[in-house]
Length: 476
Image (cartoon, rainbow, N blue to C red; front, side):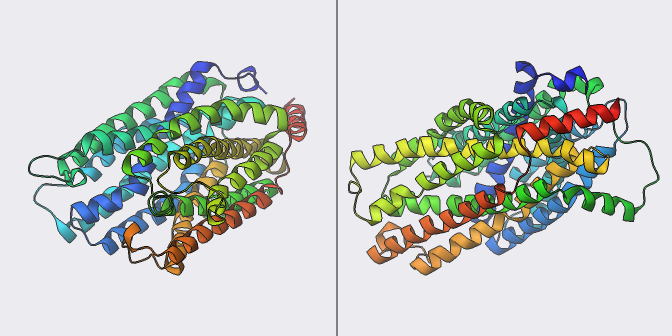
């Protein structure tokens, strides 16, 4: 164990690594919440074709994750294993994101399908080259159990912060109505400006992450000794690596957690507008309150990891968070909350949302840090450090499972009789009740399964220290 990897990273290093997460937050926010709307409702591409283009890009992206992860684990250069990928992605990731939101003038409707396919594939591929190696640095910048939690806390904080900031910029300041365009969301120039601003921000965040951690390159782990590799051997090594029991637990937990996230993200607008009856001003206030949640999570996660341990902390805080989240909905269904339209109801919901979302983000931070601790556990079993493979695996399941939550949410809407739209005016009391029960129960089931999976994670503070001691003895 080198002094550099044993020590706790400086604040500068944690900030540099964390700010890199803002690039991913900005990209995810645009791709998951705005791209479908922009190309279908604004540019006139058939929504089915847009979905098909996004699916193509998502599949190729998911397949590329383990390839890039394995490649970066075995890369041999004077700039180390990870940084060549990060620097190589720097310009492509910004340029391709810009062109995604600034398609050629004169092409419209379904003629933009090929453009969308190509640009979204290139965006996702370039992000893979950056995100997988850069996230894998969490296991290399330090081997300290608690310092890894701090690193991933900064990463997730800036991911939430960056995505939310760009979202607010887009909808509050760029999509403004004009004399020719009375409805702001149809202001194409605003969308184009968003693409430019977001691309510049992504470029800066990637550069800060790469350059800010560059001085650690001499102290990072070396790749395995050069050896003759065949395609069969590569896949055998990948399979051997991901067979780690603790990784399987987190892999399945991530799957269940993302199903819950998809349900929540898809139904959130229905819950806020139809179930609670909030207006745009109130919804904007709830959205902005996410800043407070992210700050609280940044403070709570390291404390929870240090006092409770990562696994125990994730389970305890997870149970608390995931019980609180649907509780207001259940209380309303039982007639125990103030009526819609009252200031008391809004104050209750925004307060619960702030603290509950903070706990959910804390759970995400702890689980992300748990991935880093698998590296030494696996190294003892396989003789190889495979940071890239592990973080690529989590990224892989994140991308392939995104649609499952959306499908579940669509089923809830169909059962509630809301799949054909109509807004609050078209929703019957029975439909609203069905929406509430479907929302709350589906979230509880997905989150419960996630926590059950986390319970099978085997690495504790003590076993991690034992792994480090055994590796140090082996190297000595």
